[in-house]
Each structure stands twice: as structure tokens, then as C-alpha cells.
Image (cartoon, chains in turn brown, cyan):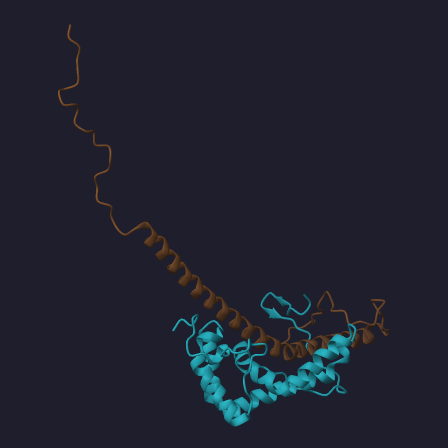
Length: 119
Length: 154
């Protein structure tokens, strides 16, 4: 029996390489482009954060300027209630008891409500 | 807690006993949040001394500030009220526009720069009060004077 032998002149070359055109640009261009885009983006983010900080500072100072006026009004109201409470106690009990062993102003944990509806 | 007004079923029960007569009376500000925010930097500009005095008194009163600092508190309130009165007298239209704008824009100052510029100009011309934001970084335009605002929605 004769053996199977390669064809005369050898086999034709096997195509194992891709034979497609490479699309787009070189990869390095994409890397550089992405880096540029992100640099720009982070720059804008930084600008935004800085402006945001300044806006926060503006808001904080607006409140700082208002705190004394609001606090003064609130304190006056608290003192009014406190004095009214003391006067009421004096009228009802005839004595002034000190609840706390301290001279500090302690905000009451309860609110006295009048008997009748107030406007 | 106790400063919250007690509300009951369709009734408002608030202790309305006025302060004793030996304590001088002072009219409260009576302005709501948007006008106060609009006027805040002018209040800060005119009343800084009174405000600092009051806050220092409170700090040093050792827990009795409510009772001991009433005098300073009245000065603070009178000064702030004088600023608001002057705004109403000299710059009523600009003031009104600005705080209306704040009301309509969730009290975001950066969305009301237009009316604010007009108000600042009027207040500076008439009352000589200037809006300055302390601690702004040097060499930068203060945020309320910038031409371009990143966060402004229009």
C-alpha cells in the first residue's frame, strides 16, 4: 500500500493572522484623549467645588449675622415665661421654690398652658 | 422642647403674660425668614458691635445669659429693627424684589443675584452699608459679585 503523502509542492500556507483593517486611531491616542478629557472634567469639578464652598460660606455668614437677633428674641420669650411662672407660683403658693441647686437659667421641660384659650 | 408652642385640638394655648413693667419694652423684629436672610449682611454690617457684645455677654454669663443679657439683647433687636426699617424706607422695591425672589427660589442666594445687585447698590448709595463676606480667599472675586455662576439655574 502506498502511503498518503503531502501534495507535490507542499501544502498551501494556512491563514492564521487576522486579515481585517484596524479601525480607528492608534490606542495611544485614545489614552491621551481620555486623560485630557478627564483632566478637563476634574478641573471643572474643582471650580464647582470652590464656588460651592464660597456659597456655603456666604450662607453661613448670613446665619451668623442673624443669630444674635433671633437668640435675643427667643431669650426674651423664655424670660417672659419664666417670670410669669414665678409670679404665678408666688400668687398660688406664696413662696418661691428653687427647683435646681444652681443659679443658672434652666429651660423648663414643660410648658404651662393657660386655662382658657388665648389668641 | 419647651420653646415649641403647645397646640391642642384646634386651640392655641400659649401663656401670654407680658413681661413685667420694670423691664423696658422692645418691639420684636416680626420679619419672616426670607426678609431676614435678605437683610442679614446689612444687619451684620451695621450691628456687628451689638451682636458681638451680646454673644460675648451670653458666653461669659455662665448659664445665666437669658436673664443677665436682656439689655444687650434689646440693643441687638433695636439695631436689627432699625436696619429693616431703613431698608423699608429707602429701598422698599429692591428689598421686596429680592426677598420675593428668595421665597420663590428655595432661599438660595445664588439664584437671586440680579435683584441682590440692585438691592446692594441701593443700600450702599442710601445707607452706606456694604455686603462683605468675611474670610473670603484673597485674590478672588467674592461669590456675590461674580459674573458667571456655575450653580445658578438661570
